[in-house]
Length: 155
Image 1 (cartoon, rainbow, N blue to C red):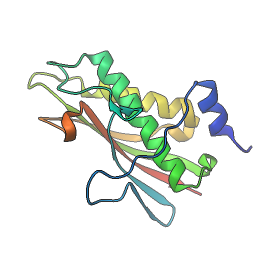
Image 2 (image 1 turned 90 degrees about the vertical axis):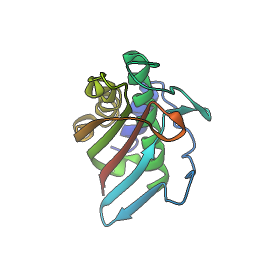
Image 3 (image 1 turned 60 degrees about the vertical axis):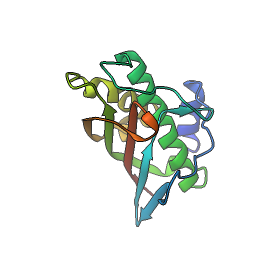
Image 4 (image 1 turned 120 degrees about the vertical axis):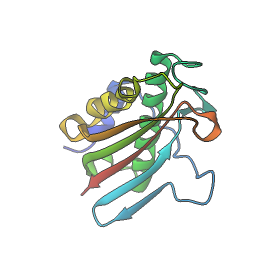
């Protein structure tokens, strides 16, 4: 069924942004045979960072979940760019690595990254269910609250 993923995005009122260019000396994605490796995506929307600072100090759990969801949308935009607009070529989201800027006593990184995991399940169905890591960090690039990268299996 063509355009299944596009239809799900529309049903969720999600318009994919233009895939962002790298901010340093790296590629936004690489491909090896049937695997896409998506570089870490920050929680940006319309060119602005949605959440800065550390969870448990400057950023609430709900703000962190929204930031993780924004990272997921940016990952999907990179997948879309890598696949020339054919998101139905995604066979499975294999793994997410979620990094959460955290205050020393913040221990709910897993709940933050659920913002991304839930979106992948909504957009890709069973193929969106993935292995995952959710790790607390002292700081992230550009003072982002969350950064997520992904490994994706494609046709």
